[in-house]
Amino acid sequence: MTRSGVFVAVVMCALVAGCDDSPTSATNAPVVFSALLSPANEVPAIANAESTGRGASQVTFAVTRDSAGAVTGGTATMYFQVNGLPGGTTFRGAHIHSAVAGVNGPIVVDTGITAVDTVAVPSGSGEFTFSGVTVSAAVMNGILANPSAYYFNVHTPLNPGGVMRGQLVPVG
Image 1: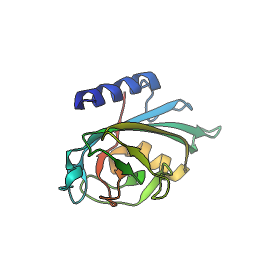
Image 2: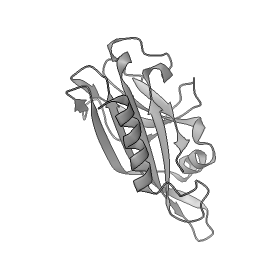
Image 3: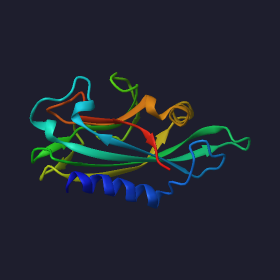
């Protein structure tokens, strides 16, 4: 898939997921964020064989609220696609971290991929979806209030600290 194909796919997914919803919506409607993933965004920037990779992610939150409208938590569906990586690359992590651009931060939402339970891109390109990921009220409120203070990234054995990353941006 070409780089433009990745961006078109993310835009199309956002349209299908209901990008008309605002992050401050008082309903339980899905809230969608995207991130363009680049090895140059990692801290420090990636300069090895995986530096040619690119990707995109879309995170759709099903926000739960109490009867007063306060956020009580929710779930996430995390979709990401990558291309331009060396053939045979495997992912050993995919997460949302709490930190602004240029700073590394702790994992706050995890897809569940581990060093044991990896996913592979034999051709150097691929796409993955992880659904039903639990998100706490505190994290959900933080992302809704300031999505640019959070980033999505993926990790490989060659780059265990992260191979590509992008800050969350509201869609719609």
